[in-house]
Image (cartoon, rainbow, N blue to C red; front, side, top):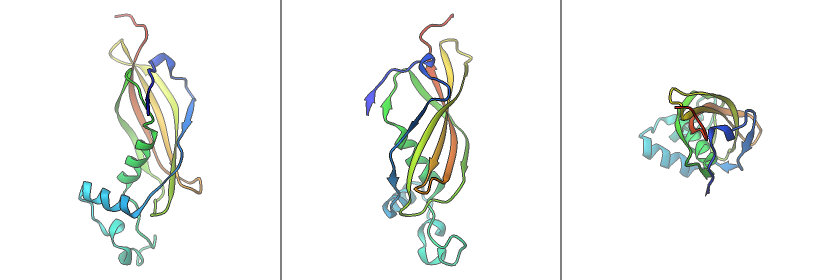
Length: 150
């Protein structure tokens, strides 16, 4: 991780970055359940899951989201901050042993109510080891402008 100043004007529509992979483990399931209190059988009961269509434990959607977003945090940008996430969708289940990777694409830039800032949308796609899309969302950033009219 390193510090890299990137202003609103520095973000280029269509530019992409991709992470390396990370394998989801049973420990991830247990720790996430402990953090969230979500001990539903879909995530924690291997025997019950055998009776369900998916046949095995599935990762919490919020686990996949948290790990995936964490994987994209490779630089500290003192010129921008996260405003939130929109259009979060869990497309396919993630299982213990799946390896996920993330592709981030700058998909939109627009003005902010504050003239010194601009909105930058990062379209986030999380894929499994079979290149199947498992999660998608939009990350909204507020980035400082290099120059602006007050």
